Length: 210
Image 1: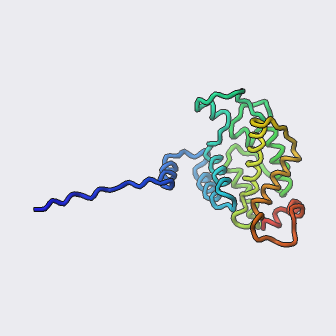
Image 2: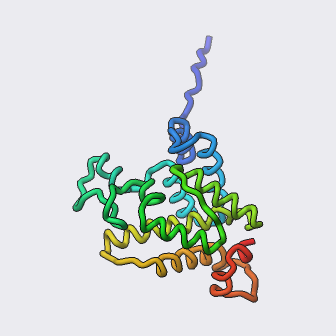
Image 3: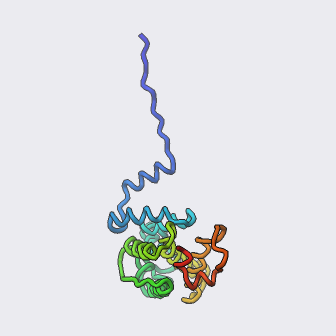
């Protein structure tokens, strides 16, 4: 009598399977429902995968801020004080919400698009409010959250340039870099309106994003 052994099962490990597994054990950095909604909207944005990954890392608090680097045992050449305001400890929430430098930039960008924001201590909540505001102003699907993401990306780049290049900052340059980022993400190398340029876009951003 012939013996038939059981067929061995092979395990296929991929980036997708590891990513799915990490999400199973992940504890959201904020309310569960808001995390899922913001997470899904982030991956549907019409920006590069690099920027989407940056947004995802914001939501799960995995950017290399000085407080997290210290927890991981990475020695820092200087203190954990925020390099933007130089008064408080650098955390993700501080950079995004309570830092005086960041607050000035958020206020200018909000004024630029006519958005009246309210304070929040949750990254997902404020992202969803910006997204909802843009959606209510008929911003095209896939671009609703790009203004928020461009703002934080510019602030994070400013932070890195101060640390690694000893650069200085001013509000005017930072806000214009946010506008330029958004314009480049949305229109460069894409079919766009033929009767506008960057300066027209900067005067009426929501109109050209709709």
